[in-house]
Length: 356
Ligand SMILES: [Mn+2]
Image 1: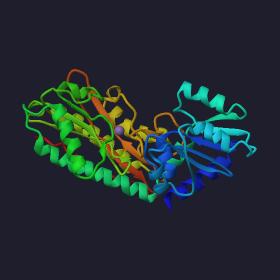
Image 2: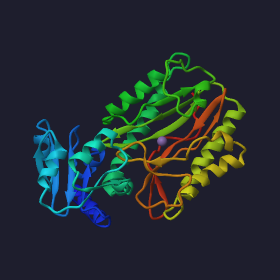
Image 3: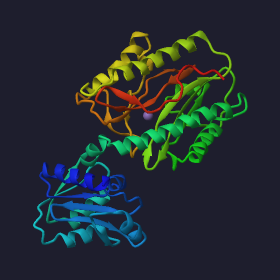
Image 4: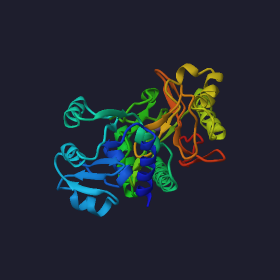
């Protein structure tokens, strides 16, 4: 089964570290390892132990879902773990590195005072970065839901009437109707001058004829996200607007054409950025080209500076944009999965300039 295979990978990776036990408290990572979805779940894995700890609210759920672990009911998981492993002879314990609070760390130091503690930066995240076939199929379905919602919102928008928030709510509701669990982040719906803000979240502004409209949205489907952006125009368009759109689309497509395993992550950014720089708008593409997606809307890999490589099984975004302050902005974002041959595009909604 998929979760058992992940635990095996986890143990193999743990054996390459100097930790003889690892504590997992990030609930997304807990889900990845066990299939448990809830607000209280802690995993501890060592050579000898597979512990899953939760409180009484979740014991029944855990017994149904979590396989291959001893399920322990407690409201104080850390103390319970320390008690259980007392005689195991462990020396060094790793913990989920980047997401713990200072208070939590102080508690760790107290409860595990007899051990050396090691922050495991990106330990689980590195495993999560390469998606298996079932994960890719799930992300593909999340993207299909977003594609359909995009087509449907085109009929919903009434120029000079509909507000950005109404568009965001429509997208959210429509995706839920199509099987989504909910939105994967707070949608960016930015019209007119607001579209020059790369992250202009939906406001109560009315979308007017003659404006551009950027919609950056996505959903959770069976725990996995989609993340897509389309920019459309309402009513009259100018030649400049067409030109800016065309440059952004060429940048997005150039990257799709170039992606292959083994390219560096800095090149992944550069392929798309070069198109915009050569067109004279390099200063107006003010953010990174993309990020990993999966159980989280933003996860590794990130691009830009890293000489690390693009690998088969990564699910990543391709989202160039051009933002002209005081005028408008354009962003086109697709989700891709890296294959042996190159990549597959998971978001299939049309990208030619749509003018309503
Ligand atoms: Mn994105």
